Image 1 (cartoon, rainbow, N blue to C red):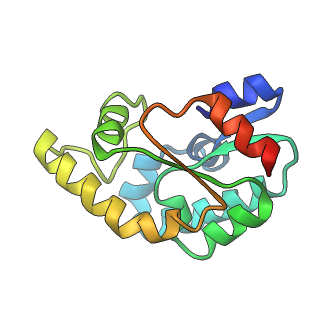
Image 2: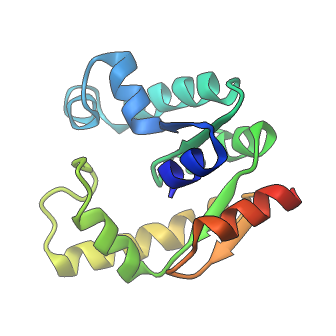
Amino acid sequence: MGRVLASTLNLTFIDLDTFLEAKYFRTIPQIFAEEGESAFRLKELKVLEEVAAFDDVIVATGGGAPCFFDNIDLMNKSGFCIFLDVAVESLISRLIHAKTERPLIKGKSPEELHEFIDAMIQKRRPFYEKARYILKGNDISPVQVIEVIKKG
């Protein structure tokens, strides 16, 4: 979604995880393995603060980014923070086919993955729902997101 939006709106797309990996010269799984999740979240905060100061960008964050420190507040202050509220099954499908390995779901069976994602969504939902805008549905289009941005 972020890439399509950025292209459509003639903005720069930044995937926060990719940006973090480039800044620290290590993959997220390496950071998790070598330093743990707490150190990763601190690095994530630093890069989020950095990209929050950029103009004319679309930033896609990982699912945990809004849930630590005051990240969701920073995201709301910095731009149009939009929570794309999709069903657990949709998230699982996206995560299974993702090109980037996610340390928190590595090695989980489909059943374990479903339980884990469902639990994480419930735990994280209060943070996600603080987003300035919420779009619900499994087939959210870039046009819908652009309409929200234009209204904002």
